[in-house]
Length: 277
Image (cartoon, rainbow, N blue to C red; front, top):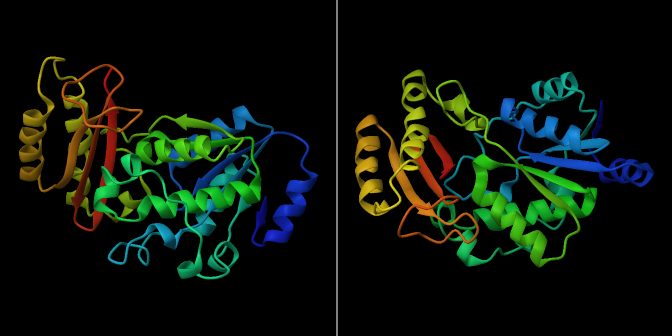
């Protein structure tokens, strides 16, 4: 396995590469969900590069940047086991040589970035879009692969690629879940045993909401579901029915729309979404 820690070695390798390249950006603490992205990448390109970088620009001042799990050695072993032989592990200095305060930022459109998680995490998606664009410029892949669990992020990156005429194909990989339905996430390891038993309630709630009758009003259903989740111990940020393309709120369920949910459980913030069949 080759681990690129500096820009010179990465660019030398990229300059010699003749075949197609798929790129999977991660923040590490890899799990089966990440590995499913890598496996999809392996079916779509001749070479795969995974990045591991906990991006400070997407964390707010009261968020969990310092405590975000960092498990680089274990991550590299997992990637090696599934045959991923190229990993980029940049530093803050490499990606932000002038510091965060002097960094040119990518500001996604408000209708995508200031709703749902964006309403609760100001500046988060600016940090995501900025670092993804930086990585794409450095790596120049033909394919970029993101996961469906972070659907709002996917939609924002998709819009950025279109608006800025980035010549990369974006693929969406399905959410990977534990046997009880909980969407896999790096933050799940911080759930205490009792919290871990409660956590699948969010996924179950979204699955139930996705089965609502098309003539039903989503608002009262979401309020009733929020009350149920609160009783389990979840602190709900939102349960909302939105269009999958525009992320606008919808007055009625319809096929292809999505229910989005986020809730806090102890120190962990869970997010998930379900498409209506």
